Length: 224
Ligand code: AMP
Image (cartoon, rainbow, N blue to C red; front, side, top):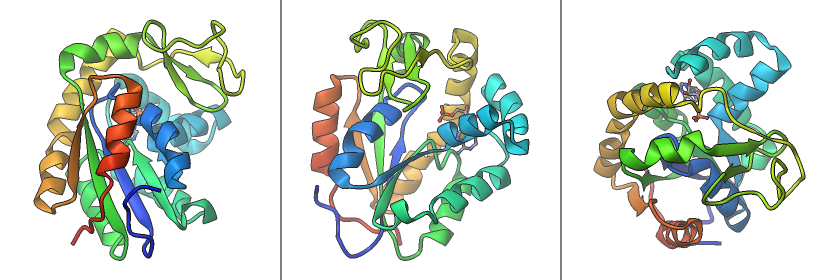
């Protein structure tokens, strides 16, 4: 386990634009850190698949590349973090997405040890990364058709699940998601920096190099 304090519940927040590799890195570091991986996007996609009321609402804002209403996300997320696999710690991927969400998280996590990791990637690399991304339907592991393809075309290396392209991973929707990121999510970098709880990792490199740096950077830090 990396250098995190062992006494409190650990929360690692992965920040970064869409396509920065938050999901890939969370999948890679969760075992090492013995933490649950919580992706609000995955939770919403699961609701869409199950046809829940939340899923019906989520479909429209996700297809448009816009953020969903905070209260819906809070109910879904704060129910998830109560589960036993989160007791030791968890990695948040895709949450918080704006200042209001970060403030709410802070209120609820008074006694947790929080560290935000900013996965930094230039906008120019994002479209190429996302429009060639494939994701496993079963375990959500992401692949890239050119940079990290699956060994067997269309099948997950880990669980043999079917790979698919997300319906919001088109050039048009990604452009909106990037705009939303810069307007609403990027201010979180300063938010966590001011609290002394931010680390930045250059994520325009190989997956392994990024993982290594993330694990090195997870030093103790508590949001006040
Ligand atoms: P992601 O899988 O993180 O790229 O998220 C996909 C989509 O789900 C986003 O474009 C939003 O529509 C929605 N979403 C995910 N997380 C959040 C969040 N924390 N707040 C609001 N909307 C979210």
